[in-house]
Image 1 (cartoon, rainbow, N blue to C red):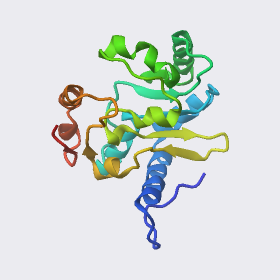
Image 2 (image 1 turned 180 degrees about the horizontal axis):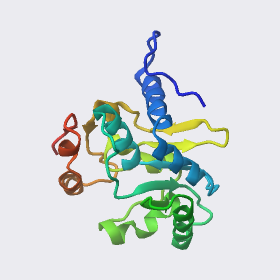
Image 3 (image 1 turned 30 degrees about the horizontal axis):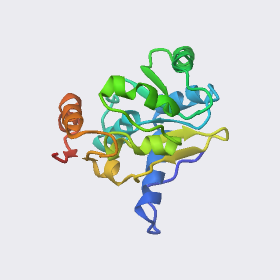
Image 4 (image 1 turned 45 degrees about the vertical axis):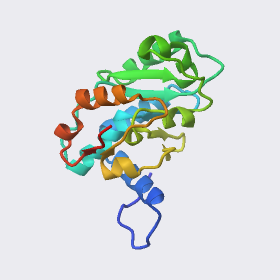
Length: 204
């Protein structure tokens, strides 16, 4: 697999340029590629590694951080409306623990989020209809990004809102699901600007 260069003499739209840049960053990051290969072994339908794992990947690269920033979890999202048992997610997470020991895996079938969301976050949500819709609902636009490793070793980028925020290092609330209070709490707990000084957090 050849990584696309982020330096191209021919101008291209931001979306294409950013996707190539993200793929380049991913392919030269060993831990991330190992994680993608581990998840691919599960043969899940319509999956990605996303949210903070991808955001941190980009921001660490843009800040020249080595080693990579610590992650509380590596979010594996997939969509299967046929089987939405929480036990399945736990079983997939356990299998990943064998493929990638020491990684803080978090596996979630996005088709079943509506079944537990209210008990965790205090309000109901409608059932999601696709992986793309799930990714589009994540708390900040910079985290609404996922990456999948296909069987032919091509990387697929899922970014329903584009990649401008993550590459511009901007944190903005996604009103699709995150309340103002939840957004503020996340900002305080994650300390974006302290960890990545070039990041701008849009107040809310």
